[in-house]
Length: 67
Figure 1 (spheres, rainbow, N blue to C red):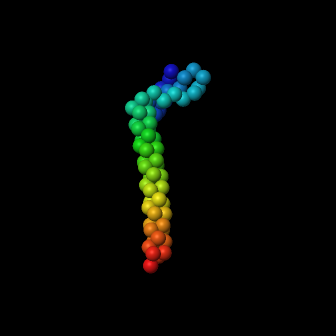
Figure 2 (tube, helix red, strand yellow):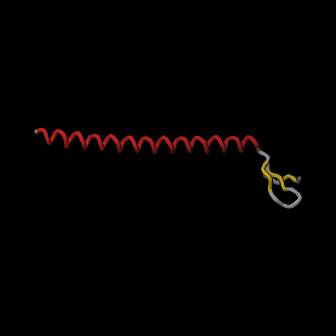
Figure 3 (tube, rainbow, N blue to C red):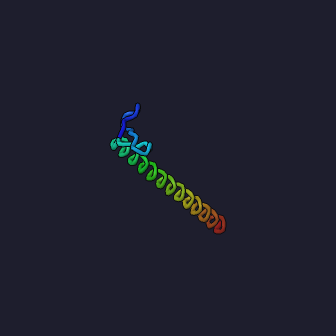
């Protein structure tokens, strides 16, 4: 494999560029996983906020009926 001007990147016999920077790959995967978990938590928080608003509306309707 021939090295390129960019560290960690190499060109194989077919001309394809190969990334051999395993540390960068591990960091990318870690950030991707963190983003996935953050988005999942954000979705859950939004669902909980919606559920709380529904409960609040039901309680307000119940209180209005009892007055």
